[in-house]
Image (cartoon, rainbow, N blue to C red; front, side):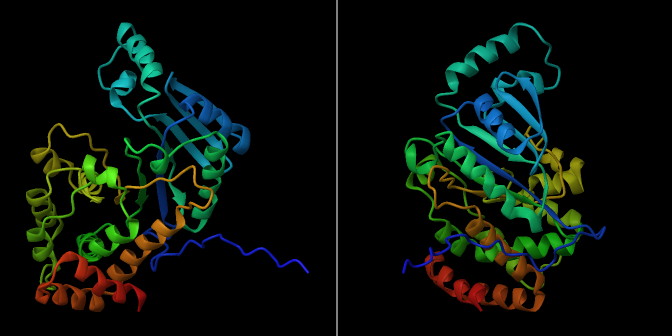
Length: 325
């Protein structure tokens, strides 16, 4: 008798706080980078599989509205190829040059697929995107060793206050050595400088159980140590949402769109691998949320970190026991 096939599907964990302050299910946006099919070919395949209305913003940027899994955008991941999105740009020669350059660059510049905010309890539906990309021949990290492809999550903050953002930042910084180890960053990502970890001085500052700042102090401390988007957990969009003037005083020209979400940047999008899912990376993020929600445990882990004298690799083993407990 034939044995039943084993399911390889990985369940998506739910965070401890499922609803936002309005009582609505929290949302998360997902970004996936890849090369191979053009933005136009990709969005057409998505429309065929998921329905919806296709809108062309320029020859290399498209929006799929009202698909079966919500709104999606697909575009070449380069600002210079989309001059119409830049303030003050006029139609004319520049957009035409950008379009022509974009066709040439499409062999070198990754495409970026971005979902609209999706209810967290429906996140598994987004795995349908991966099957569509694979059918198109999209390639990811394992196929292009000289490129860097990312997977990003943009989870909505459950409560828009200083205590919540501080708890999340503490939890992420304390778990980050384990998160980075589990994500197994591709060697190319290290070579290209994917994302720097938070400075040890900053982690030690915020790890203290006594560190409970108001939002203005939190923003000032963050910007003092992290005046950059180059972090695994980029808080600039969230902090811009809280206090745009404060952020712009330090980073007047940085590309930042304020929104009440975290921006969790991961180094590995293996879109051509039929066994790859976004679930494991999401489930590790939920470990961050669980520790952030347990303030007593969070304080204990912070105190343990301050007393720890080993290296990050050894600390990763310590906090692994925390997330497994």
